[in-house]
Structure formats: C-alpha cells, structure tokens
Length: 225
Length: 311
Ligand code: SF4
Ligand code: SF4
Ligand code: SF4
Ligand code: SF4
Image 1 (tube, chains in turn cyan, green):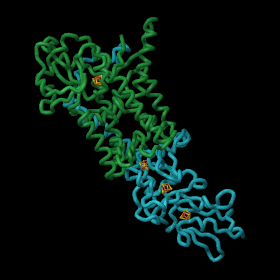
Image 2 (cartoon, rainbow over the protein chains, first blue to last red; image 1 turned 180 degrees about the vertical axis):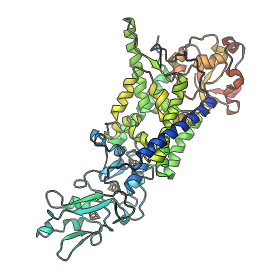
Image 3 (spheres, rainbow over the protein chains, first blue to last red; image 1 turned 90 degrees about the horizontal axis):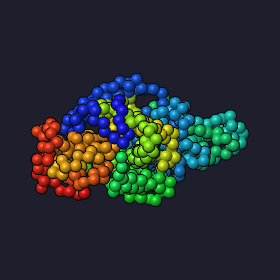
Image 4 (cartoon, chains in turn brown, green; image 1 turned 90 degrees about the vertical axis):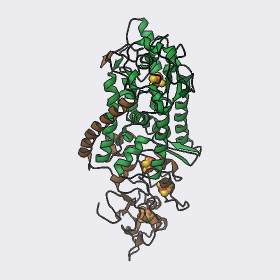
C-alpha cells in the first residue's frame, strides 16, 4: 500500500507500466490460473458440507444440484403468478448458517400461497423464466419432485374420528399421491407425491396436519435421502 | 483540484441509474416488459441477458450449459469484446454508488483540505491491483468447479444492491456498505483490485477496438495530467499513453467511463474505434520511449484508421 493525495488517483511511485492489452491479458490469465488453484482447494474443503433443504420451485433437482446451478437472480419468483415463491434473504439465513441458500427461491408459505403447478400454463412460468439449469422442465407435471407430504396423524381429523377429505380434494393427484386407507384416512404415497403443498393449503385443522419434507439429495421419488 | 463532471460523467450516472430504476420497477411494479437483477434480466419477454460471471460459475458448478446461459452471457461478452468493460463504467449499480461516493469524498477532501486535514487515500501498486482481481476471479471459478457453489452470486455487493432494489433482499447490502466505507480509505480499491465481474469483462474486452484515443499531436503541448488524476481506475493516461506515443488507451482497467475525456481541458482525448489490424498503433516499439518530446515530434500514426465518435 502506498499513500497518495486524495485527488491524485494514480500515484506513479511504484513505477509500473500501464498494463496494456497484450501483457495485461496474459498476466490476467496467469493470475486467474493461480486463483483457480486456490479456489479449487477451498472448494474441496467446502464440498459436501450440509445444506439446508428448502421447498424449491418445481423443476429443481437435488438440493445440491439446485444450489450449484441457481444464480440467485430471482427471475422465477418474479414470474410466479401465484406469488408462491420468495427469495430467501435476511440476516437469519446468513446467521443461521445457510450461506449457500442466501438469495435462492423457495415456496415459503404453502399454507397461504402454495405452488399450484400452474396447470393453466403449458410450461410452468417459473421454469420458463429460469435462465439456468437450476429449474428444468420435468416433462409432465406428475414428474415434479419438490418434496414429500408427511401427515401428522396426531392432529389430522380423519385419524381422530372426524370425516375429512380436504387434502384429497386439493391434491392434483388424488388416489395416487394421496389415497385413503380402508378406514378412510389419508395416506401419502411417497413415490407419487410431487410435494406441491396444495394439501397444506387445504387442510382444515387449525395448524396444518400435513407438511412437506423438502427433497434433499434423493435421485428419485420415494428414494432414501 | 477542480473536479470536472462533464457530459460523460453525467451520462454514465444516468445510464446506471436507469438500470437500477428498471430493476426496482421490474421487481416491484412489474411493467410486463422488464424483470431482472444484476444476475439476469428479461427484456420484452424475449431478450434474456445473463451476467457472464454468474453464467460461468453456474455452468462450472452444475456441469451444464443451457441455451439461455450461452446466449444471454454470450451477448454481453460479445458486447465487451467490441466495446470493452463498459458495464463497469456505465451500468453497474455498485459502480454508480462508488461514483457518487467518490464525488462526495472529493468534496469532503476539499473542505477538509482547507483546514489542513488530509483524507487518507491508499492505493495498492498497480502491478498488484491489476492482477489481484484476476486471482479473485480464478478463485471463484476454481471454487465453483470443485465446491459447486456460485459463491459470487451469494456475496456480490453488486447483486446485493440490485436484489435489494428488486425484491428487498437486503442482508448482503452490508457488504456493499463495507465496499463504500473502504472506498474512503482506499479509493476504488474494489473495482481496481477485487471485483471479479470487472475482471471478467476486462479479459473479454482486453482487445476491444472501442477505446479512449489520444491525439498525440496535441498531447505533448498540454501534459497537465488532468486525465490521469481523474481516472477512477488509476490508468496513467498521460504518462503511459499520451507521452509514450501510444495513440489509444488499451489498459485492461479502462472502463470507458470517460472521466479522462471529461477532465481534459484541451482536446487530446476522445472515444474512438481503433482498427484492429493496427492494434491502435500501440506496438512494442513505441511502448518503451520515455521522452515526452518524441510524442510531439511523432505524428499520430494512421490517423485515417481512427474514426472519432466522441470529442
Ligand atoms: S408452478 Fe406456478 S405456482 Fe408453482 S412455483 Fe412455478 S410459477 Fe409458481
Ligand atoms: S430463475 Fe433459476 S437461477 Fe434464477 S433464482 Fe430462480 S431458480 Fe435460481
Ligand atoms: S399429497 Fe399434497 S403435496 Fe403431495 S401431490 Fe398431493 S397435494 Fe401435493
Ligand atoms: S482511462 Fe479514461 S475512460 Fe478509461 S477508466 Fe480511466 S478515466 Fe475512464
């Protein structure tokens, strides 16, 4: 470091030549190479560290693949007609240790604003808006895999003697993702549930008796995390 | 020192402000034809632009390269190949804040100067500063490949300003504030020595034909160094170009901001397109002369290959 006059932005005391295009380009590439080595080393240390699983937009893959590809641009959230997506932000995220999740999109409150999978659109707007491979077209809506619904049988009406079909009515895949057992109680089939959260929105108990366990590193539905 | 904020000074602030305003309007009002942040924008529902560094990080980390990324980042990189890192000088939201901050700092320095107090102004030597940001860039790319996170998309003070404007995601603004605070101690150290996005555009624009051009015949007459002193990126325009007989500024740092052109009390500097076959005449043989007079004696080479678009 050297001291200069505040108005004199270019102290020439170090006597360096201007870094013109050719020399500068080569020097830049060399510096880039050195940095890449160091960055790769740090990357090897950080690699595989635990990431917070969040309910990602449809079209996202495994949590770590999503975090690798997403450039935190927020285009998906801007495109969502249901206002289901928000961009994760705030100090709590950083201080809570979810550094990698900062500024990524998630379905933040499916109880109030669930992802409907946008059946009225040919392509899901969030997927169409995403410039990267963070969200890719799953092909068909029933191939979406955001997470898996989990029932809280302690509070669910149907498990406590009250007839209720609210979640079943809301589920886009009734009978497959959400079916009834012989005592007319809802059961989630993990290999069919897309994790949209429409059931959470519909649940009639005071606190929703169904929630979504977001997809982690599972390659396919119903697989182990 | 008299500070000149001339027409380029005002126009580059206006363009950067317009971009930031678009981001805020797109995120909060949704005009239908613009959404975006610094990382990616969509204009008119068709034109998608993707920050080239974001594209690089994402592609390396996800080991994939989609058509949107390729086209969106390719367009911006292609623009930089022709025009140089104009993003830095004219569009960058952080650059805008730093530009305004600099105006304030110089004003404060002047007031304090009258009372005999000097503001600190530390500078990394150019030789280190100009390389350091490429090290940072390399580090991010290496990290993206192995660690699989596009880290700069998380910690970018540029994107922090943009995403606060678009969707109120503000925690990282603390980093932008740190950059602004440090700017009071070490002017423009962020852009000069650290910013990996600037480094990306600098590499892409290293041989860009659109440059600040130097009227060598005029240069020797008024070596007032006003240009050098006004360059926010620390390019010694007078010493290393005008007085060395180099007719165009090919420094990787030059963001085409026009501060030097604005500052010139004479008509030595202007923007121009340099014929690539002549490399702007900045050949090796003239690079090492240190006699200022020779610049006067030597007429500007191949003047017909330079067509002016600025003053
Ligand atoms: S599918 Fe539709 S509702 Fe669901 S997140 Fe995407 S845009 Fe929003
Ligand atoms: S549009 Fe894609 S890259 Fe951008 S924030 Fe959403 S998921 Fe990430
Ligand atoms: S069970 Fe719930 S989360 Fe699963 S598909 Fe049905 S409505 Fe969606
Ligand atoms: S050389 Fe001139 S145009 Fe380039 S960065 Fe410096 S002041 Fe701006």
